[in-house]
Image 1 (cartoon, rainbow, N blue to C red):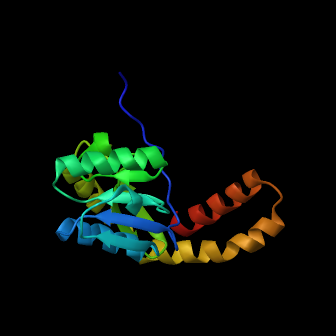
Image 2: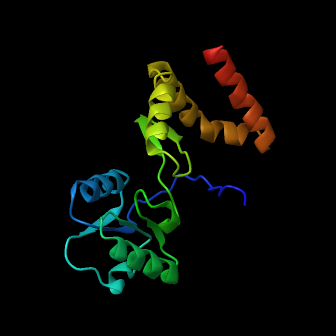
Length: 171
């Protein structure tokens, strides 16, 4: 059987309801990460009920209780709510990569759940390559997007133009 492949996407969680089940340090870390991205986060420190998932976009079951993890995952699956159980890939409909952020640049590395330690090591190595010049270039290119979209009719023309600007700036 081939290894599972995940579809990578950067989600806009602004204003979306996200649930974190758990009360420890891991739950606090997950809630903070979601909140930093603009999510409407509810941290569930009391007993879990399936109705807690009503209206949720995603849930993180950050608890050591294996039976509760399975219940949250099953309830999320039944409601088509994305679910992550840290360190239990088989109970995840999405996994979280190791992320480094610097302004508009985000570097994300995943090992498909095989080794968070390896993902963190690789993330740190890749992040060391990103400097202030990359952050500034990303900001300048973002500002150019509306003008370039008006100037060039096709995606291919816009892509070629931006690639030439990046090559010119970075060599």
